[in-house]
Amino acid sequence: MGLFLMLAALMLAIALAVVLRPLLSRHTPDDPAAAARRRMQILNEAHAAGVLSDEEFSAKRTELGDQLLVAIDTSPPRSRTTYFAAIAVALLLPALAIGLYRFVGNPAALDPAALMPAPATAEHGQDMEQAISSLAAKLKQNPDDAEGWTLLGRAYLETQRFAEARDALKHAHDVAANDPDIAVAYAEALTLASESHQFDAQARSMLESALEADPKNQRGIWLLGIADYQAGKFDAAIASWNRLLEQLPKDSSVAQSVKSQIARAEAARDGRPLPDEPASAASAANTETAQAPPPQSASTAGQRPAAEQPPTAGAAGAGPHLTVKVTLDPALTAKVSPADTVFVYAKAASGPPMPLAIQRLRADQLPATVVLSDGMGMLPSMKLSQFPQVIIGARISKSGNAIAQSGDMQTVSKPLDVATTAPIALTIDQTVP
Image: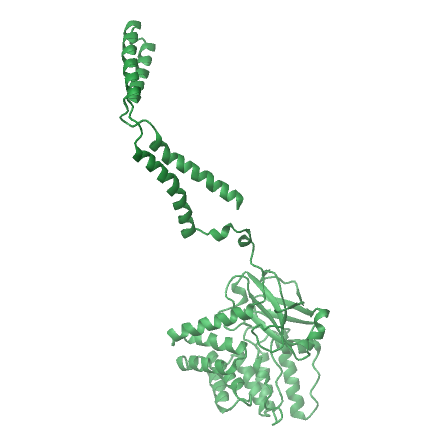
């Protein structure tokens, strides 16, 4: 900042000198003294070249000398107007320059802190809430924007505002009734917003219609399997999930979690105890998909279903795959309950505030390893692969709300290359004030 001010002052001084010199000069273009001096120079050159003799040169020099003395003695004094003009320029030019810079320049850039990269914070929840509010306001002015309503509905789903998600996705479905992705999202929101959290006839019909239009819709296939599982139709659920497996990479964590769900459905169908899941499958089931619940009884009807976390189409396909290892600082262990929700997310280092990929697990699963990849965001048009750098964060939520709350525990990384393949280690060691 000091160097900038010195350079600015020097440039301003030069500008003042250029402007003030003509104002303060005693000579004008018609100054007789200046004209006499020019004639004297011409005479000197002529005498040196032999054009004028010594006698002629002496006579003419005497004549011009007399003229020069008269001109000097009679040079007009500087007028008061000239002085006032010079003073005005000297005062106004710097003031105008500073004012113009403040108007069109960037004074904040003089602050060294402004030149430093903005620190990574875990206020992504607040940013998301602001983005949601802004999007909702814009959609009031553009009610026919089906994609915007879909984004709003999925944002509400991510923040567990299920009734609002249902209403937003209904609006999107009313605008684009033939879009299978919107129909699937609306069916899910209907279920999550209901008291029983069961897929009713309307939601199931929407899933079936969506799959008729798009038989390879992975989210739709997964949710239809959930609906069948809830209804005790285990063979149908197994068939749906086997169809889903055909579309997934064999070694992906999503495929492993789907296989685990198939095994549970087979055990439920055959009356056998539900199998214990391997640690890797459990991690995948809670980060990239969710366990299908058994058919609900009256005592479990109020619990939230696994439909809340279906796999996202393309989640394990091409594109970035960020492996994140999350641990909890031992100093915070006493503040954490086993059922607390853990959010692991990736957001653009410079870009939209909404997470590009986000996954959930429980606090009792820590330490855990999750994979964030394309297709795990709120909208297919917002992907990890669209941004060169991302920030990875992990937060333990007491309320289970995706919006950061006071008392939550968190950590965030520095900006990272989205193509990194090395595991990213995060230790949750901060408390949200």
